[in-house]
Image 1 (cartoon, helix red, strand yellow):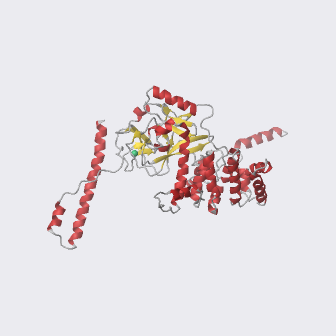
Image 2 (cartoon, helix red, strand yellow):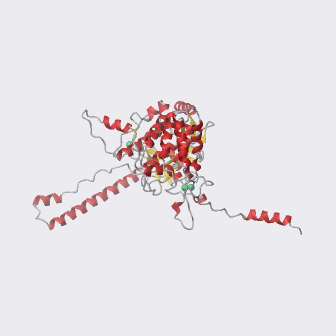
Image 3 (cartoon, helix red, strand yellow):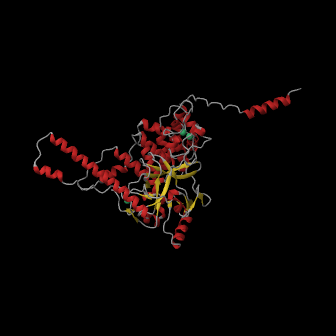
Length: 498
Ligand SMILES: [Zn+2]
Ligand SMILES: [Zn+2]
Ligand SMILES: [Zn+2]
């Protein structure tokens, strides 16, 4: 305890002395400049003699860099597990069943390392990890951070007001995978049961994290170090949901550069469930004072399970906000509100920036709920920018739409919307159709019962018939293994008449 206070005082003291030195230097510099200018008056000199004003209090959270490690003590409070434990027969499944391998190409003798499923990898952009056997880059693939546990080096410390916290032990650039949020994956019924059990047992801290609709990761009793990451109103990390094989998993990623010794934080607002809204001690200038504390508060979500999938809407809000930034806002109306702007936002606008298509494809890939899907589809229908539609195609757009045709088969509005989008996709050859096999799904609609989409499906198939397949570069043949050659030789010798 004493050590901690001393350490923290040392950090603050150092900051202050640096600030005052800086101030003195500035005054000296000023006086030199003034010597060459007009003569100074007595009152000026008097002002100079005054001691420098005290430095402003440090802005931002208190440093935890020099706090002693509490790793062992913290780890004794729960059971450490390396993989999610799935409770119930059908939990943690990814909503995506058709995954195509990415199109990365990597030659270890010629290409820079990042070419092996680095930032340009389609799968990475869709938040899907490659599977080694499917990936064209094989064991060189860099897009397997969950599977290979490429965790950042971290430590646990006991903070002054927030309990345990997680500290970075190395500098981390923006977009770095910190670690997976691991725990027990619970279906709805078990989640409700657990909350009652914990309340009765007087458990103070719950560690529930929304995974997907009706599913929660509980790291209260079994989990990993990620459970110690505190909330901040100005966080340096966020959560991403990744498809890894057949499972959906949560990873913590940095969203800005993190210095060595800095505390790792994320915004609990959309992600975590607690018994009630808590006071926030993040220390950031924009701190709202509470974790939660508005209609999206953890308390409200805890009581109302139907809001559990709210986290999905964060993506949509984010996409909408980024699109708004690219459009001039409407003036405030005479009646003093922004009704017009709100109404305008409700009307679907097309996407004009290929970078935002990535975001749209990522959300569509996860097959959201019906109403949200309709809104997303409306954005795609309104998109006319060729570069954006082309980008959608490259990001497995046809695979996504094929999955949607199957998933929303009982939603005629969505099927019709897809039929309106497909003719706009700029196809240069038949290859993307063959790879995705979307034509089989369209054929079914064309031959199915009478509906608005039936005629459109027929027209589409006629349009696609005109397309020619493009030349494909043949895959390099694998070298024949020595074992295989030996077998042939043995076989040959056996058959040889001596
Ligand atoms: Zn790749
Ligand atoms: Zn890969
Ligand atoms: Zn705060």
